[in-house]
Length: 224
Length: 230
Image: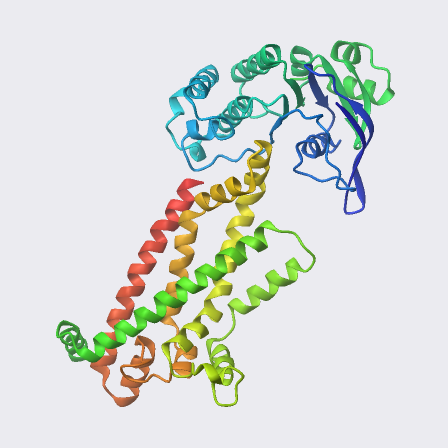
């Protein structure tokens, strides 16, 4: 999947300007960068919730995609119903939903109103919901930002398993370089709406080519 | 004062035919106008909240201005339109309940639309991002939006109803407070008071306040439910 000439301007300020970016099928991508670097705008453009200046959509070459936004809406229905919202409602889907919720320790809240969940629990519910959609490309905007460390590791295991078992391409934004190192095959570093550097995660993190990447890694190197 | 109050209670208990007629006409007018305002105001408010187009903010400001339109101004406009010199005179709406309902719809619809717009603007961005992210279509998104807003819609309807039942300026100008035809509770209180029939005016006042109290209790309970649901 290739992205070409994506540009988004807000109030005459260019917040996303990508000439070319390629995503290999079946890999896990981590998009990193400081606040305001354009990461969320990129993923939202890809998800189709934000339109580019030329109102062009990203071509996923016929593959299905699902997107987990940073702010997830919990509908006024049970957690279980929320989780099944984008998937089939058959027994198999219900079993998978139950298993995912158990992994993330929200199975006890399955019948509770999802709109009463805490921020971390809502993020877990949203991750289950996105994974259950069975999309071939998952776009995740800081999926574990609100989770504690134990839940973060459980969520990472789920993401890794989905990628391994279904071959789904995962494109996720993270502020944690440790998470990027643990989870991703490839890393994309963004600054000022542009892709500064991209490549294999280990390579970019250990031997960055661009000065901006080096500066970023020096500053955030030993992160959370 | 004590005597007036006791006589008023006795009048209510005696099922006075004039009182019953006044309450019936009032309820007919209020249910019709608040329902019509709901049917017009909710889609209009939803449209303002969900769409982006040039002039949208100007329409929102205009709608909020209409919310504070004095009822007598609305009554005056309707009176001119419905009277012998007005462009709608052929419809013969002056001094009819239908004419009163139209005047109230003009007054209440902006309130319903503004309430809907404000509420939906608060939930729609995250909701739409989530449904679009899951690949849900327009009809499913619309259904979920209505489901999310159900208490708010009922609460908005009751706010419209409360506004309608307490309104006097427009209905007295358009309806003319004709006994057994267009005399509603607020206009009847004015008429009985001017005639010195305080006990009858008080009886209607008690009924009006009781109805307002019931509506406000329901609105309060629903509002708590909306807050609780967040």
